[in-house]
Length: 197
Ligand SMILES: [Zn+2]
Image (cartoon, rainbow, N blue to C red; front, side, top):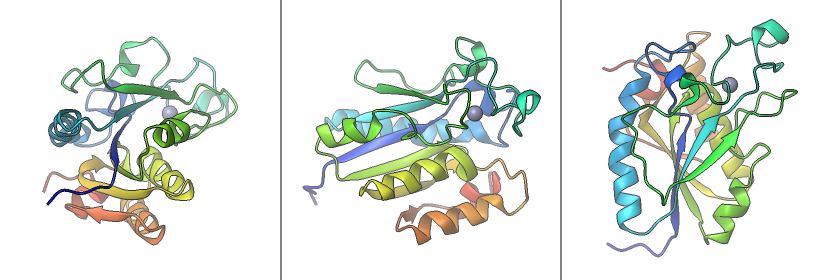
């Protein structure tokens, strides 16, 4: 059944440093690539906008443990770790949103300090589909900001994985997104646990 709702896909931070082998690897992080690629293709085939966010940090930022934050160095601008996972689809129609470049901020959300909300409005988008890495940080904050900005949100549980600094963080993040009015679709255990089954 055809829907009149204008949708966009937001692929959050599917970068080498968040995948196995990276400096801030999310367990099973690379498993989000296949389901996201399928959606990227479907959205582009229908002429719907696709955005890829990327963590794009300066070498010195309060986000990193060495400068007062909680994270190991990751996704520094121009490094291999900051590149998108090599299997993630590339296409000139995809808009890349860089974030996290403010050395005084964490920049978890794709909306934080970026043009994303305006770009979505310019495209007449009402509903965003969100997946990527990681469930309990950048995906969650992007979903919550999308809701604050007035967009309907589908959180793609099959296509996200959690860091789980604390064991329940992924589960809590799913609850927070749901409580904010996001529709959780797919297997929430995958999204919460970083587990493949
Ligand atoms: Zn970061």
